[in-house]
Length: 190
Image (cartoon, helix red, strand yellow):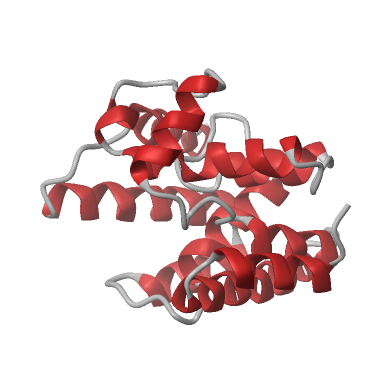
């Protein structure tokens, strides 16, 4: 397993400067949230560092790897291959022997679209990606506040924000995001 220092070197060599800074901020946010929720803060930090491991790959490369490894879940992923960066990143980290911890790999795999089954650790990585200090979008402060109080409420708000953004930008919506949003909404109503 990579130590945090090794992970920093690895992502610095793979990612653009902007994406490297983003990953560092996600790691710091994840560490802080994990502490607040009584989870493994250093594991959250490492996961935050590595969450965008495949983000520097081209859409064609993401699609090629996903097709070869049978990682495609929906046709939309062919049309918007950047959606594959989470799944491909988790695959590469494991295949290259850099990360073998299933909790870290799963959190990386679901940090973009979410999943119907998410642990608090998974939610923290998902949310840290959205609330890190470099982000700027309507509703960010509300989401930052919710993330510190209630992970499920924060997830619903985050998913709603993502869906709203995609609609406003005329972007395709991945069916997984809608399923996950509906799952959180139903769970919170119960």
